[in-house]
Image (cartoon, rainbow, N blue to C red):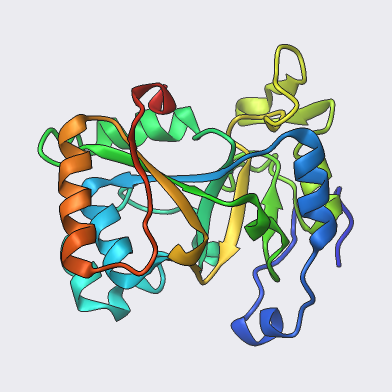
Length: 231
């Protein structure tokens, strides 16, 4: 495993990931910091597709499912981190506001409002999870697995976009030093780990509740109108 200074923690194959042990120490560290959720933003249609598939799929896996392919709207026009297309991009505790604003500009969707999916922190212990200190596309990004990777997200100084150095000033203990820090989850993330869905607009809650009823989900996932989550 590369050390926490290496920018080149490489993507692993599904076979490699299947042979890796889990990392429970990461969950203990997250709990100590007060981390309560791992989040992923998408559109209302995206959330419907995720519920139908019972998983958030990596961009590389989406075309495998014709239903998801039909309704899926990516958050960006293209991805620069092409080596990592088989990973799901997540954030710790709060969304990447810079990425959210960029995605909102790229495809404004008044008829397809945004939602945020909140997953349990225990997913951080799953095999093959990679932690990125800033947006995964930036040259300053440092990536690693396990406790070294997780702790690096909370370093006192973290280089970010355009060489800007982020500090811990005015940040909750649960927030990574750079808000653009990412959790890269391999392959697909099961909705068994989904703890709630936040919606930006009340009508999205009605749409998602209707979808839940049609799908007859075995797990009841609370839907909460929480516009502050999108700020």
